[in-house]
Image 1 (cartoon, one colour):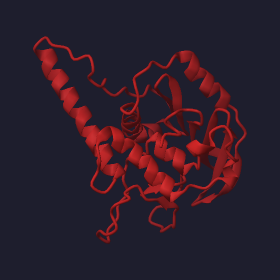
Image 2: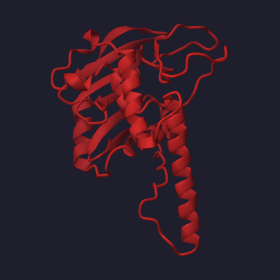
Image 3: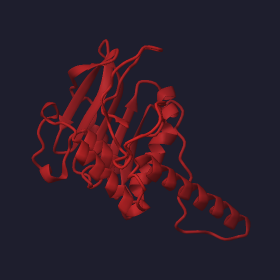
Length: 243
């Protein structure tokens, strides 16, 4: 399952949350559940935001959009076309497969360098957040794809590896192309200072939304007027609308 909304929960208190299934072929299992640390890649996130490829250019406002379970499963199958079929169309299986392939390639590259060899297609080591950094822009295929902003640098650090892993999963499905600083800064500038509006309650916080559907859709949570987290997707990016 993936969460459809960001949620602020009180420690130890039960809470019903909205989720979508990301494993279409599994209809049984154990009674136990646990919270994972992975983040949904962009195509699945686009489905969770209710951004449909067939509606590109005429998307409805966020309050009028709903995620669709069949669309979520369709987006998971998009990743199967690159990473190979999963027995149950499991997004977790595909993510683990991509992570293992990256780790294997990087180990091979380290061994090659020890013997004076270089591999041109080896995934680069994960970057590290800078001191005091609270947000990050992910760019794929020549364009900004995603902006993540937290209220504290520790929150970003906790989520950093999961953000990078989801970005690698996305990047493996399209040809590589550099994202210029100009494009990244322009994307951030359009979102900076955007007016957020509350659309409901998620645990202890308000869910807030800001949108300019010509470029971005942003969702997050705020408490007492203080923004705790915001995630903005590029509504025109091929991965947000991939299916």
